[in-house]
Amino acid sequence: MKRGIVLGTLIGVATLSLVVSGQGQGPSAAAIKATQIEKVKDNLYVITGSGAADQAAFSGGNVAVFITDAGVTLVDTKLPGFGPTILDRIKTVTNKPITRIINTHTHGDHTGGNGSFGASVESIVHENTKANMVKMKEFAGANAQFLPKRTYKDN
Image (cartoon, rainbow, N blue to C red; front, top):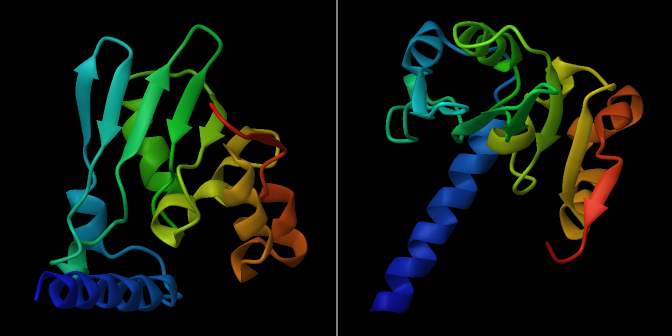
């Protein structure tokens, strides 16, 4: 019984991911409004959003914002089209530039905004994540410039 529930949940999440990644237009007004920045500690913030239950306000995964002397490191970048919203939220807490993106995995709600920050931003992922990103249509052609140039194997 538990396996059936887990399998059903996984299929549902996979289907939702496919639907979300297929959305060609930019974020909805509800999704932008739901995307807020919250302070965790002095130099660490999280940009949140609505969960997947409210599709009109869905913005993808959370974004960690780590502010250093050298600039801002982001962990994940939400869905495609959220780059400007992420930048707007960051500008409310610092004027430092985005210098690094770390993607936790390949799902579009975690890598979709990468291209909004330019090819000069250092991008870091696990080597398996890069191998999967290379296969994604979102990183094909001209968008290949947004593929990570730095990987790690262990930690």
